[in-house]
Length: 222
Image (cartoon, rainbow, N blue to C red; front, side):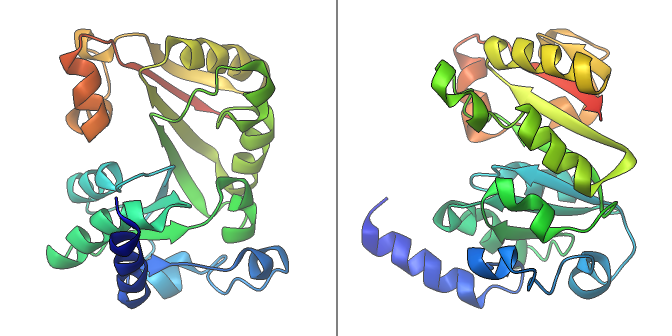
């Protein structure tokens, strides 16, 4: 994507009613006005809130929102030029139960209050295979601790990935700090797989499937 196109999308995001872009400093200072008020002020209903972390173009958040009109969805990514696509499509098609938040995922506890979130989806994150990158894995214990701060006590986390490495790593971590509710290393060849895990496919997921790569899925609580 060219720099001019990125700048255009950044400017458009500023005009989108479904996009929130806080400054990092204001988050850390506790000045974020939406914290604890996503239902009352943003969505204006009391439906469950579901996050997608590292939402990319926002396609998964958007499709889940269409499939689940009685839930609210928030796609989170630091790259606003990417989720511009999902935000624009949501506005154009009047999907009102999805929004987008531009921030770093490690700041999640500054963006949401205790027990404010019902579910979290992590879809095809970078597995960060190199050992020195361990702390950057979105299922590293430090990230899980942050998620636990905002999740309801019975809230669940979904991990969907083409990386058998990340799938195995996460299984090991969760077995120590949480409860595994469902795990499968090839969900498209498993008739028992949860519907939301197979009914929606991202651009990259379709590419993986065309290459014959199995898609793994893990559901757990903390």
